[in-house]
Length: 328
Ligand SMILES: NC(=O)c1ccc[n+]([C@@H]2O[C@H](COP(=O)([O-])OP(=O)(O)OC[C@H]3O[C@@H](n4cnc5c(N)ncnc54)[C@H](O)[C@@H]3O)[C@@H](O)[C@H]2O)c1
Ligand SMILES: O=C(O)C[C@H](O)C(=O)O
Image: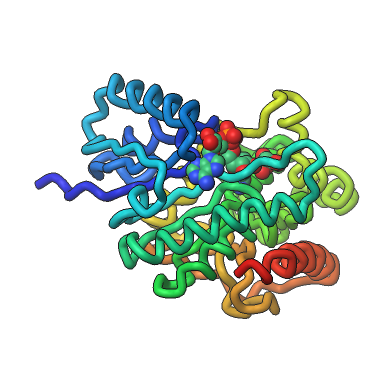
């Protein structure tokens, strides 16, 4: 018997990540090749954006995806999030000329407060939320705080792009196949302060750290390369990463919904105090996933260098949180 369709809301659906994401969700790459989906798409109430969204919907129709059980276009989050089982919050206010970080935080705080409230009011009580729009951790924090009737653990931020970037850099450095790397993680904020940590990583059971054995490369090449990869893509393309960001969103949601089969993946999730991160901060952690739930990997040793890196990214997140607390 075929499965009942699930509802997947995507915001910023006419943007560049939306364009790289929707077709893959509709083809079953996110929730499985046997799971029908209804797409509930949100764009701003602006003629150009709504027209662009219509064009994307025409293209989705033209793909004749067998798993696509319905498509809706909305400009009101209360309609877009109605009964939704999954919400991918991609749409956000980009930084404009002369805009300070505090202005960006404030502009996005408004969007994510409204969207959190809308999720709280109308989404499925089990909705799984992934925030992609930047600053992703703080936007997820704002949405979570604005949705007090939903479980806080259901609000997550995307660190998977950083995780995938780190895996790819390690594979290139040591000649590994990227798919063979296990137990890699990225701690903290989706920003250049994130700490990509391969101290526990293995390939075929052997230590990646021992194979590389080069702390200078770790500190001076690997961490800055992964941390500044987003800026390097903007410099090269004139636009921020889109296909790789959409791919990471698919990976994040697929693993959360369908399980990681014991493997570590990185998700930005609300801390419960693990590793000394204050409760409620949305922080990149190593997790395993099973039966639609994630579990933070606990008990890892944090050496002095790692603690310094974790403290730095935590301080940045706490600064962002302080910058929006008067708005919550
Ligand atoms: N977390 C990550 O790893 C990661 C990676 C890449 C990009 N990003 C972020 O993702 C966001 C989207 O990137 P993009 O390249 O698709 O941008 P884009 O400008 O191409 O598209 C964003 C879309 O969101 C829409 N939008 C804006 N406010 C909205 C709202 N309140 N409700 C619904 N839609 C809204 C816009 O109209 C636009 O169509 C940006 O904030 C970007 O910085 C995050
Ligand atoms: O770096 C950015 O501003 C875009 C995005 O968050 C990325 O990591 O590619």
